[in-house]
Image (cartoon, rainbow, N blue to C red; front, top):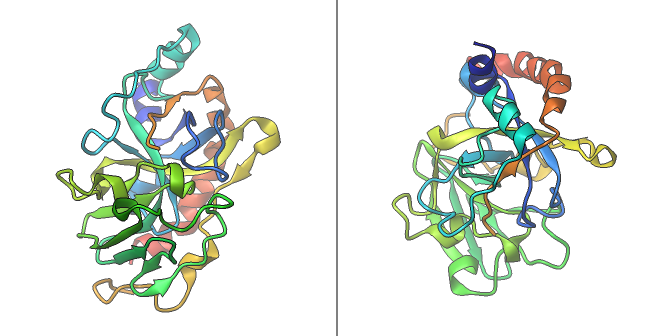
Length: 244
């Protein structure tokens, strides 16, 4: 029963195996993902860092990690995903109704508004130099999101999966939850807030009302217990907005 409760409603720990979200997330970081808030009506928002199930073979050819005994136990009780789950982590750039576009070096625009993106990996351009990852204009359908890694020149994200069955979008029901805390190593402990650029005036669309790599199991999954009060506080703080 405890395993079902944790897996379904609370938080899980994920390990970052690649550089696709640098420098926000480093290889070896362990992040805690809030799985509780979505149960109260909240959907992914622009700027959030989210974990989601592979929507359509984005991870084809990637090896499945081989868990050790501790990882297997923590997975069984729900503190970590199972080793055979294929999950990714990216930043939400567009939600249902948004138009997202870029013309190679940028800037990246959402609903015609240029984003100031201080989280993008130093030296990267907002998009890529190639036509597939750097030149696009898409409208996000309702119930889906458009995601990109912060290390733009090293992230196989929505841009490079536009030929899949979702047009590169991620269905909202494939989202596991929002990454809220870098919990390990201790010298990198930090929260993962939404950047201010996503709060700018005019970003909301008219349709709205107001290197891919599999995530591996985190040995430090027991740190989840310490963040549960934070998740509960966050849910209570956002509850009024969710009931509108």
